Amino acid sequence: MPTIYNFNPGPAQLPHEIMLQAQAELLDWQGTGVSILEISHRSTRFMAMAAQAEQDLRELLNIAADYQVLFLAGGASHQFAMIPMNLLRGKTTADYIETGIFSHRAAVEAKPYCTVNIAASGAASDFTTIPALATWQLNPAAAYVHYTANETIAGLEFPWIPETGNVPLVSDMTSNLLSMPLDVSRFGLIYASAQKNIGPSGLTVVIVRNDLVGDALPLTPSLYNYKVQADNNSLYNTPPTFAWYMAGLMFAWLKKQGGLEVMTERNRNKADKLYRFIDQSDFYFNKIDPVYRSRMNVSFTLANAELETLFLIKAAEVGLVGLKGHRVVGGLRASIYNAMPEAGVDALIAFMTEFESKM
Ligand SMILES: *Cc1c(COP(=O)(O)O)cnc(C)c1O
Image 1 (cartoon, protein in one colour):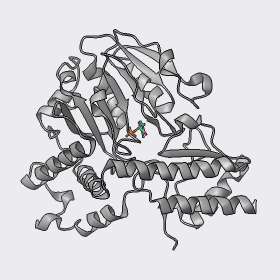
Image 2 (cartoon, helix red, strand yellow; image 1 turned 45 degrees about the vertical axis):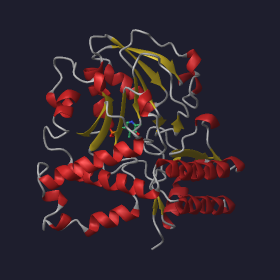
Image 3 (cartoon, protein in one colour; image 1 turned 60 degrees about the horizontal axis):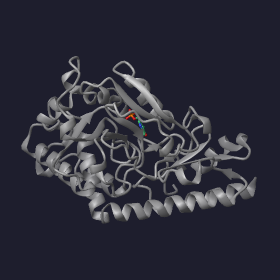
């Protein structure tokens, strides 16, 4: 068996060390004789683990005390609806920046609750670039401005944080949160479902400024109400306990690596290497504007699209899995989140070089 490098976009590869730790303590967690899978979310031990996970995340991102950190059940897609439910606060319109499939879905999901203003769209460029901030038609009366920091499907990432004045900035950071240090104080709300760069699916981390919490629409279900979740330390009902535990292991792992400065450098190196290789080849092609290429999801096509199936088969034979592009857009994609070691990218480049030479 070759070493497996898993390039799946999500659920995605997790660091080998934390997988081994989870395996080692699966049947007997902290000497309790029972599994983390079998323990009450209201037990002292679980609550201590949950508090530590929050503490570690706050440290990693330097999150100030005036922000709530919520660990919620469900995916980023739940937040697409929860955001307007909670953040309209008497306003009737919200701005959305459309840069690809996930930002589009977020905007569609907000429509039952408010007037959605697409303040900028990358549609004219077929979502290969991001419209300059100066061209955005931001509405000063908007309740918030929503954008997707990394479009996972195309591999398009904001290298800057939009300036939106007094209007709270909301960001879907599902596929790039924790890949680099972040000035959380620039945001009203940040959300990320876990299965890309944090842990297993079923969990979404929401970081929200206190002043935005507490004025949800009247029909908002309790579980969708940030205030209810915040008042109950995200334990209003049974949370996804195992995913929360794994996220905690991931946060501790990141601290052990040296924090997010270290990760940003590693991630930059990995992505630069892969794009450099793609760019020098006439056989592989990436269509994203180089300024906005994602460090997390590297999409590419082959000059001859008919070879894609063979590429995937041959790659899998040498242990490189999960390279198929999203079903909506096709092509190929290597997702290289925090857990992907540089050796994985090296192995991918070696394989791509050999595949090209044989065709
Ligand atoms: C995967 C992803 C989503 C959807 O997440 P779910 O947890 O499946 O709802 C939304 N936004 C981005 C940026 C994503 O990468």
